[in-house]
Length: 166
Image 1 (spheres, helix red, strand yellow):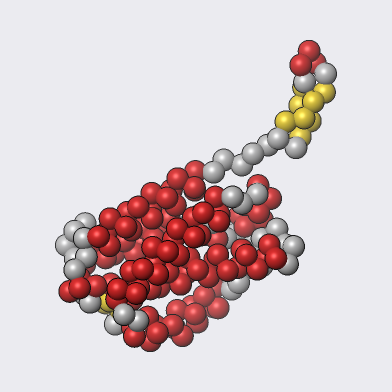
Image 2 (tube, one colour):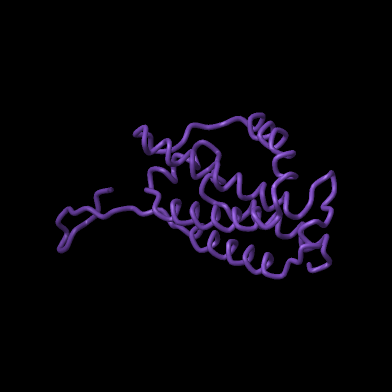
């Protein structure tokens, strides 16, 4: 809170609240993901996205990263931290490398269920973050910890382009 003039010039306090457009953006991206998934056939889920990835693998990848960020926020809260500690880009890249075979082996229908569940869970959690948590993530250079739309949009757009639905 910051000091602000009260009524009739008396000092008072007003709470400074960080704008939260990411909440609606996350919800919209989850809805777009749901719309895309509703249009996918089993053949679409097996479609090649390039570099050995399929549509279902991309969905499992999104599920992992939403679940990863949720687990990090929950762990930070349980430890009494305002936000999770930063993780290097190298760790993120190695996560993708290590999980690619798991995502490939995952049943496509399970990937669909996981991605929608993970998106809903992280959206709900980050909608309730404190101003301090949002600011800590931004200060760490990691708004993606709560702004999930950009990652989803990248993959949704890629899938749509490959399937000719862009």
